[in-house]
Image 1 (cartoon, rainbow, N blue to C red):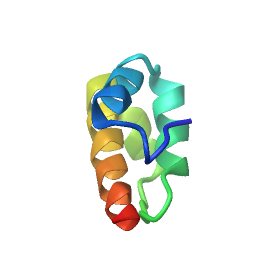
Image 2 (spheres, rainbow, N blue to C red; image 1 turned 90 degrees about the vertical axis):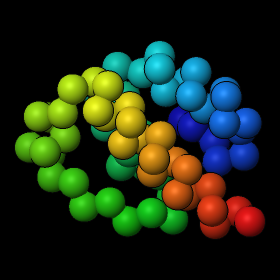
Image 3 (cartoon, rainbow, N blue to C red; image 1 turned 135 degrees about the vertical axis):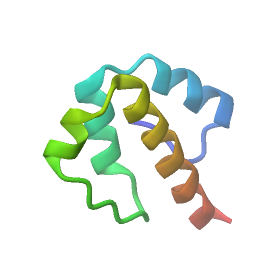
Image 4 (cartoon, rainbow, N blue to C red; image 1 turned 135 degrees about the horizontal axis):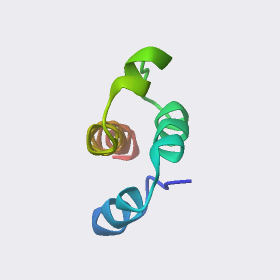
Length: 66
């Protein structure tokens, strides 16, 4: 599971190793950010799109640490 306190470079490296299922699980587990993506929407995304969404959600969740 990605940690909000990890350096962003580490988070990016970790995200790039995730497969489709892991990306979706991580997206659903991002704290502090309410995401309402449907399963159909997520399944229609490419792995790169899922990774991009995950990084964006993770960055938004990090704002709650400040």
